[in-house]
Image (cartoon, rainbow, N blue to C red; front, side):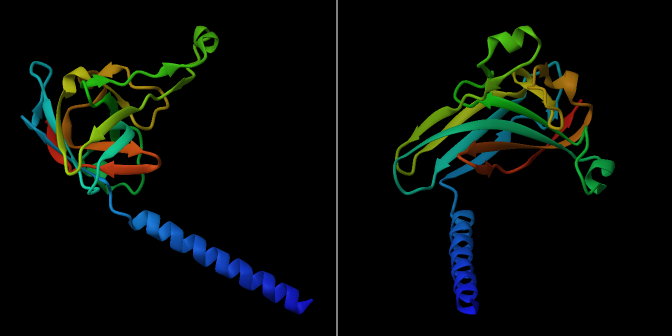
Length: 193
């Protein structure tokens, strides 16, 4: 009986080590896309455009096709928000977008009957991007034309930036999500007026 327990324990130990090694390789794998952003003006106000230039660089060393969802993130830089150890309402805002044309991402409604009852059941559409080896693509998006919401809410963003995000200082970044991998851009400091 002891031999059987010992063999099971050793087998489980090796299986766990192999699983942990595979997870480490996946987590440490370099991103195939390098993402960066720049903004024309660090001051965001309702009376002017806020153009963000998004640069995606294929660093995979080969042709690449990815299906992904993109979203902007505004992280509140107020003293109260930065000093907290957890995120609460008012700390982060997000705006999902179709990176190819700079428009807000709309959910694909999959249950119209539920929608009639006020319940939204939908899927987030992914955008497919194709890159040649070592290709860099650039996109321009106007933040005032995208839709925003607090990231703590479960409601899909549907309001203008200035109706949702209070005045203050924020760090703007872009997130590119693909198959469980999240690629983050650099942060750009902005001020909402």
